[in-house]
Image (cartoon, rainbow over all chains, first blue to last red):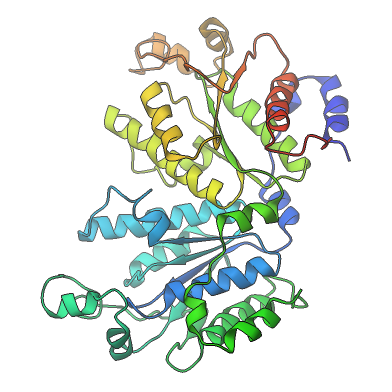
Length: 213
Length: 213
């Protein structure tokens, strides 16, 4: 259908109708064909958050969902490039990621985020920003020993040597998620199985079409 | 095609391939069917930025494009709720909107922004963040007298009375865009015509399918 026709019709009355013109959240969602949400991956450094989030994002994309992934690569040097690692800046880091996630959800996307986000208060702050069921907490539960053994960026080694301070799991706490929607154990499953666990949750809970395969 | 089949195949080698799995910008764009960009609407308060941006967003949505609109309503009280109106905060306001726009463009959307953004340096900062042709400056050129007559929020009246300081157009400069991609005169055209001018630019320059109607 040509939008110009309806424009023509509505325009006959007056330009005033155009001041009210806007695409509603419902219209954006309808055009995308799935229920938007933020998949908030949380876990220790080296737990596999980013890896699993990337695979979930890829699987959802292949299922035809409109998706995006926020992680250190595209957020830390851009939007949050002005923030350091003080307690205050860490909270602000998570707050901004939460607010941006909310904008993506408003746009209708399934957005994944992959940040350690070690504190319950910060994760709950983001949950509060979003509507019911739009915040899906995905706890990537990997034993510290396993993360430290993987140590893909050599950060644990530096933290143990005292070269990095306030490193989560070493000299800063990781607060366990109290009621995560999804609890993923990467040390007991393959990455593929972990990602499918997340996708299956989305199917079982009506975010995406359960018949998609 | 089932994504699980390809997963099955690739998984035979090892989980390692999954560490490389990610949806590329090109794949996101291909799935959306238009070339992403930020439509950066700039102009005086009351110039019609937000109105025209909303109509453009609606027309693009009706053409099947995946779009989003950033404006004071969804940004000022959320992501930028911690910012005031100092010179420093005004720059930071625009910087963050630019960075978030960049994320939406990376996700493949046509995102419109509607902020006064009176300074060339700030607008150029955002242009520099984005790749060539991904920043489309839309100058909403409405004479100050017309804006002041419209005064939809009563802000000009307050600025003239000295109740608001540093108000753009009154006691703070609006720097004219030097080379805006689109120059829209709302006092000489209907809102519909203004919006169509923007949409036609996007068609003529290959952002959206020229045969869409």
